[in-house]
Length: 311
Image 1: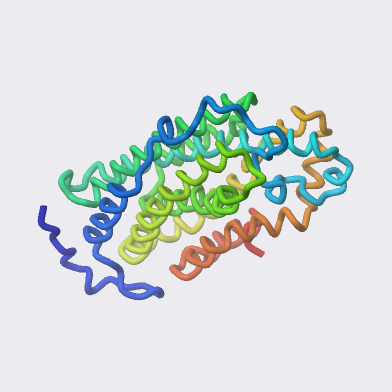
Image 2: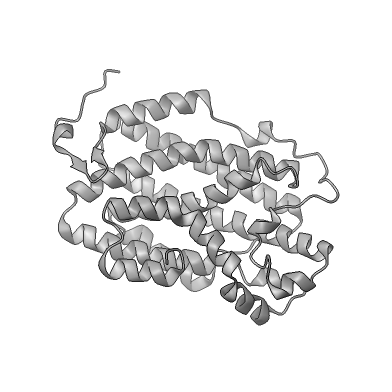
């Protein structure tokens, strides 16, 4: 197929410079997908037993790390908490990916079905289907329950999926992808972590890099071309999404499951300077980008600040 350049591409630019041609970006992402896509059912050894003494998540990324409560816990109990937090994050990932798949389907509904842009969106939806099944299988293999987000946030997401603007959809997509991606980039090379977890995070990191590129390019375009009311709504909705993300990141139920006092654990997480730094470090690349393209302004910025993801 011949790529038809965007007729207005020369006119579109933002604080980061000229915008790239939408079809050319999608074509490169499709080529990368053809070279580097994975089937977790075949790539990972699901029958191998877990390795004694290895973590399910790097200890420094566990929510209670370096708190008084953590310092009183035995190593065995810390590892058990990490196992449950890994399941909580996998559940959160599935929730986000199901939302993302629906938002992508909405985005391409009125677009030319033969375009590279639409083909890549469908490729990403296929990736996210595999990721969701992989995360569900990890939860089952780990012997923990799933940890759904609170019902109120689950139902609020129904509204988001129905009324979200296009730039709001891509801002929420990046929020759900980039912080977890930062953590997973620390996880897959960490030899302290279970081989199956490392393999799953490696697959996710490789494929999510393309998803992030697609979402960033489209959000830049939308923040230049969308009407003012839509840009303002995106600033507020992304800030509210950041607050929900921060609240739902780790289910408080994990503390109860490992025999900790839930209220004490949650209070220590909120007071933890280490945890605050982890979350802000994970969000920094994203928040710098959003700031550059004009998303972190006005009341929306105050919502982002209340999420704890920016100072």
